[in-house]
Length: 334
Image (tube, rainbow, N blue to C red; front, side, top):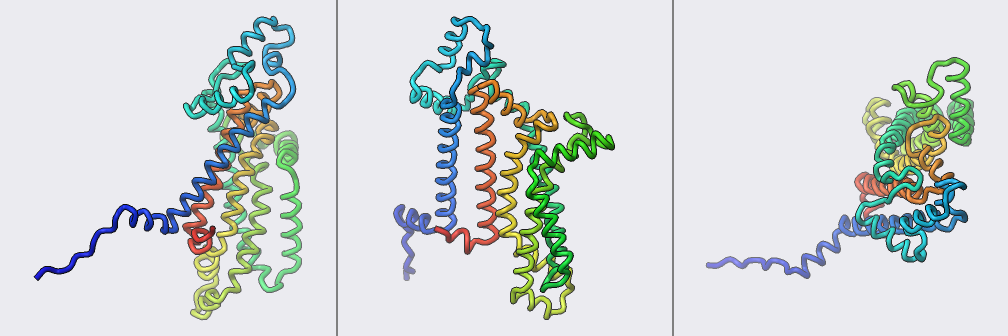
């Protein structure tokens, strides 16, 4: 006697099943958003530089450069072509991984960025890790101390200090740190990258503001979570306060903190531009400023693209982490 067999789903059935899968639709939405963001970034970086008045070749070669040399350089760089043609050529070169050649140094832009990008990444990551290491314990501790109206003076001191620190711009913090810890006490180098102690002041300048903001968010999230029913249940089971706070409350309080953390990392990457100039840091921040002053189009476009792509990738990574932590709210979002 033959047993009935279930027919395998056809191609259309498998496609419909794949489309109805929430993770597939989530990946499709995020990929579409990432590609749209990349196109906007590329277009904006191209237009932003080309619409600025002034002659970049004359600025790069100097006011005494011969007119025929300026004209030949413009033809070589394609600056005499119509704007749409320059845009099409720019997109075509980008698709081939070619960022062009610097007008001032005549070196490939990709090579220049590759030499300076590691220093910027190291600084941004060090500042982000320091902000997390400081903000999470401080936020949890303040939530425990000030829960249900306790410790009003401590709460006011914490809130006032964190608001003040987060309101001070990075470069002002950098100048203040240089004056106090480098010029007056000579504990750390004033500028440059010569050793591990060179990381201290620029890392502090970048991390203090985000740590203040993130600690307030962690405290608010912890206060909300610690009043939830499952936390009361955990207390009713006579679990230790440390276990309740760190094992049950803290993981559920990191969702909003993670979202803000991704935004802070993006702002840290952008904040390196000014801080690197204060400390003469050999990263992309000082490169982008000098290239803007010299109207070095290819180098400005390349550095802007690197910064922008970094921010977009960070935001996408945060979205994925949020989806893994809380699939019901993120995966199901339209």
